[in-house]
Image 1 (tube, rainbow, N blue to C red):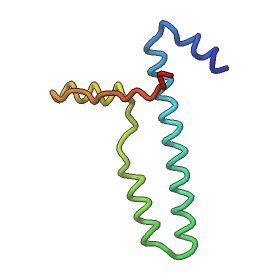
Image 2: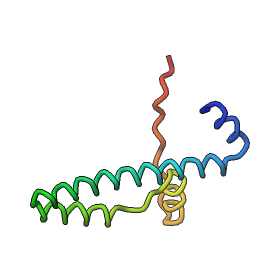
Image 3: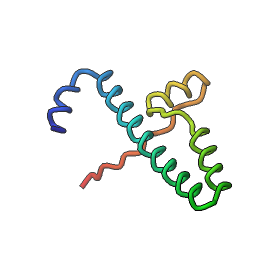
Image 4: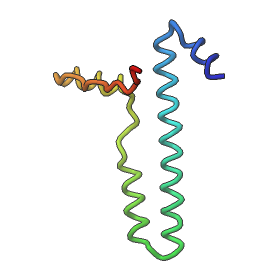
Length: 91
């Protein structure tokens, strides 16, 4: 399936960006679900202060942004984009 997805995205850079953004949004939703479950647990056991802090934390999380989004924002502000680290081994 992964190979098929890669084949579908070849020659379509926008499709790759959309796929990456969808993955980030899905991941964010799962992370928020986890925080909400923890908040609910803390509320149930009487740790209301911690539950409120978690609620505030999830509410104030910055929006999901891809590397392309970050680079675009930095170029508009006049900053140079961060270097991307290469993690691929050469040997």
